[in-house]
Length: 484
Ligand SMILES: Cc1cc2nc3c(=O)[nH]c(=O)nc-3n(C[C@H](O)[C@H](O)[C@H](O)COP(=O)(O)OP(=O)(O)OC[C@H]3O[C@@H](n4cnc5c(N)ncnc54)[C@H](O)[C@@H]3O)c2cc1C
Image 1: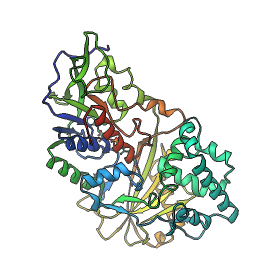
Image 2: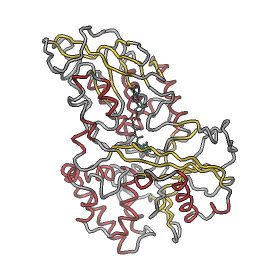
Image 3: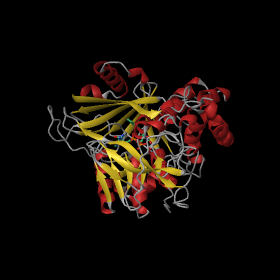
Image 4: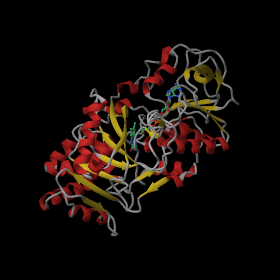
């Protein structure tokens, strides 16, 4: 057994601790509280939400999201989590899928679901999708039907190939890839079709566009993320969860228990050298506090996880597994205009480095070096898989995206640009490339009373909000806690 454990016994009556206040951690805390456990949630930052969070912009004084987040009703566990924490009123869900597309030099085009039985509600709109010529529309329809037919095979065998290879096999024309497959896949998986694993790309499409009516409607939060998570934290606190912000966990102390001591309650395990089972018994916090615990769910990124376990465990699976994942960036450029330049809630841009334009709402300006009035129109210009902008100066990136905006929305030329703020998340999602599944461990660990969560762990989903919630709940079950 790897070393580094103490001989303390596990405190049976201690709280369950969740390390990390991102969505996986919030979901784990909610599930533990729902199972009647005492819970402490420890987040190192002042803001909850992790990769979906907000910050007060010192320049404009606005409370800004780190990046626009969108999901679909096929994200059932996420929807359930949002319902259970009582924030359904802060979620906007389209009554039916409707996306307006813009493209430089072309007329705007709308894709809108029809009131028809599935799959015709979406297949027929694709047949008239204006950016494509008739032959290209037929090819797209063939591609979609082929995906629907060979979906199960792709899900089980597609981990070793890229989605681009599958599309090539289906002879999808370049323009169909440019106008449909590439924007859809890049938006959902934060990677282009030539890089992303075919199984996860197929899974994303089969559960949304090719699933039931309404499964692909777009949903988003109508308030800054930070406001939403503050409300979730309030609900969790009412259920007895102690939410500790600014609490950085620096280590997990292990003790041992006799094998079988918690038979039926704790699954799995590895016998220790002294005949006992290694077991998480306390957390070591920055500042020197030692927090005795009955069990721990870590919900933090892989690099940080390795540092929490005693030295002898750091190179052991599953703690080292996630280090093999590579990460993909997402860029969001916040811009403010003195007058509205669009009345759409969002727009999708084709064949441009600028992929989406979202109108932001519910912002609460306050202070800032260059205050922006609340009457300004606030837009978020979004670039997924933004590798090409890494290492490029903010001014150059901002200039290029504003030029693209003016090219597709001429109203931007006559409005006055008041301010811009660029946020580049360089480790937004792990890269779901062929072979990456080997680096996504399950939530269970060989240490009793310790399980791991995070959208990067094995969930069957890509790095999404849905994956994060699923991982948090699975990690609670891996501790042997009944969540039904
Ligand atoms: C810009 C951007 C846009 C995205 N868009 C979408 C989208 O549209 N749809 C979608 O489904 N997904 C999207 N994603 C992905 C999604 O946000 C993530 O998959 C998900 O939020 C990950 O949640 P998590 O809880 O697993 O991890 P994280 O959010 O990384 O949470 C980990 C938390 O642990 C804390 N922590 C770390 N170490 C410690 C420690 N030692 N002690 C205490 N706390 C610690 C961190 O501060 C953080 O709060 C996007 C991501 C980004 C960055």
